[in-house]
Length: 117
Image: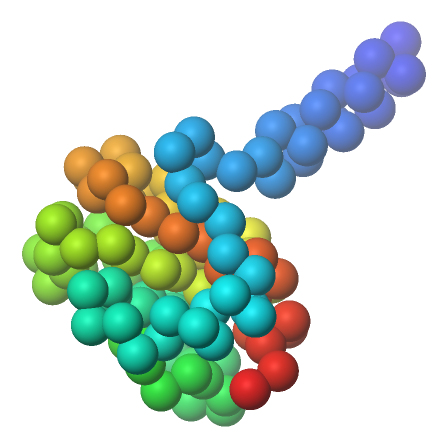
C-alpha cells in the first residue's frame, strides 16, 4: 500500500514539472540572442529581493504572487518571456499567462541559475 502512495507522490511532482501546453522553452544561450527584441516582453517572476540581488536589465520584475493582479501591465499581443531562479516559478507563471489569454509565452529553461551573462 505504501508503494502506491509513493508512486502517487512521484507522479504528482512529475506532473507539476511538465511544461504548460503551448509554452515554448528557451535556453539561456538562446535568450541572449533575443534580449534586444522590442517585440517581446521580459518578465522576472522572482521576489524583489532576488531580483535586486542579480537580474537581467531587460527583465521587468513582477513576482509570481503578484502576476495575476498585474496582467494588465502586459500586452497580450506581444510574446512574454518569463524567467525565475530555476525555471519552476516561471513555468507556473507561464501557465497563469496562458490561462489569461496570452498566446505567445516562453519560459527560460534553467532560469537565472543557468544564466551566464
